[in-house]
Length: 261
Image 1 (cartoon, rainbow, N blue to C red):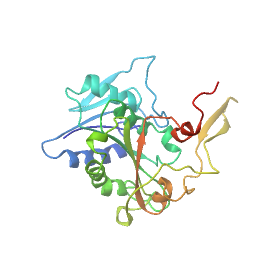
Image 2 (cartoon, rainbow, N blue to C red; image 1 turned 180 degrees about the horizontal axis):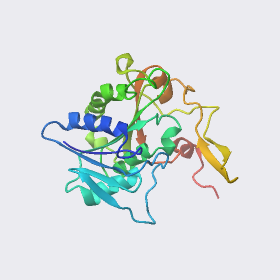
Image 3 (spheres, helix red, strand yellow; image 1 turned 90 degrees about the horizontal axis):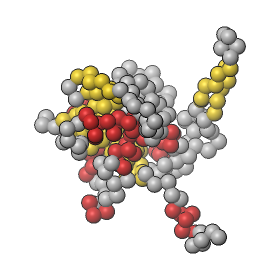
Image 4 (tube, rainbow, N blue to C red; image 1 turned 120 degrees about the vertical axis):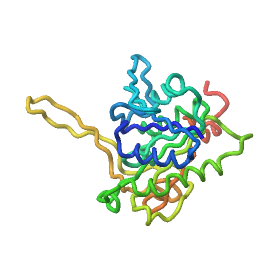
């Protein structure tokens, strides 16, 4: 198997080392793992592409390239310049922090997987939830390291039948904020929404008196509804969420009249 990996935390991020080990396990002795990742952190860029300016790419080693761009840029760079052949699978992550609930909409990790799906490739985003039970571990990615390869294999083995394949479909995986030994299993879950919390800004003054705004997130331990991703993660389960690069509210569309005029 030929696997492309990327992330949004940057090419030197510890989560990418975890993903490399996962990908090497999946690819096997005869497989290939290619890394094309951002030269610098790109957290929160979503599905951004560098449409109005070029990006520099640098080969750091065999099958290892850094790109001055977003995760979606990295996927494009890999497919149309870096890799001589298309990959069989694209993995994005392992992100430092969860990309469950509304976080998925901001996530560059998810954006990389989404771009791969739009390019007609199987793609999975992987993120490690942080919390009191794993934040202080020597390896806070312990759950991702222990459960990553088996979760990806389960998705690939039980994905949609080929005659029902939709190339805009991709997968969002979040590992719970516990050590690997305490993970209770894997659950399919819908994307949730943390009610009563949201991103905001925190103003600060520089020593020169200029005003700056820091973006700050909401309470990541706020539970979502039962059957959704954050609820599963906080209960100790790996959440697996099928997603589609289609923003249509199909349920609302079905209830509207045929025309608005």
